[in-house]
Image 1 (cartoon, rainbow, N blue to C red):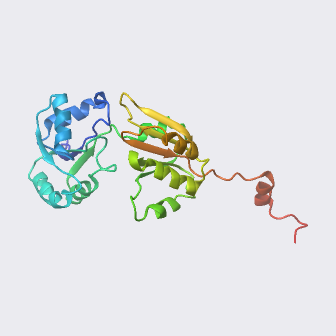
Image 2: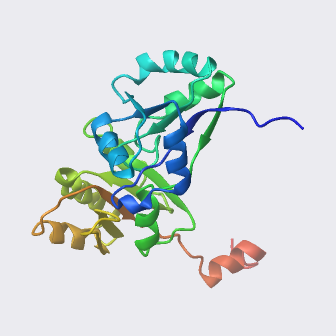
Image 3: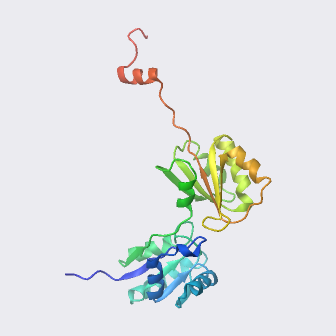
Length: 249
């Protein structure tokens, strides 16, 4: 019976707010690996202290990942085992991770992604919008390409999920209302899993009005209904099934 291959890299989700959301498996992995790669070693250091885990930390973020990835893969080939974490949530979801995953796979090494916390799933589920089909857009471009990205979604019928910062939310709501119509339903979720979690539901116009007078703080997930699918009339269905009327010219 062959042995299971050694895992060189674990992708470990960390809590997005409530520290009780760490999994037992995540705790086990973070304790057992040789090195924990952290987006911000200070943030992860505080989490590890709370969890009473003492392990080696190394910085790995968007500004150094291209330089670091080759050396990290070489160390994995020599037998070192790493865990990758972001400041909150699942690595690779609007956070560094993809580049390292791609290179680990290309090198023929094994990796595992642990299930766990990620912000857009609870936001989608509690939005009250259809969640059988959805598209995750992450952060919209800050400037160049922003309108192009929004315009490309005008015919999207699936529920759309965006990440947004507090100081850009109203601008985003206004741009979406202009593209989709102010009556399009949406939900703003912020501070998910934390003490002051808030989910505000309504039309884009209603949300704009609400946040013009209410203070915004914390991480935000914006969930927006897709374009309603046109339902065929009885006559259109009959025409599609039987073709044009004999009397038509």
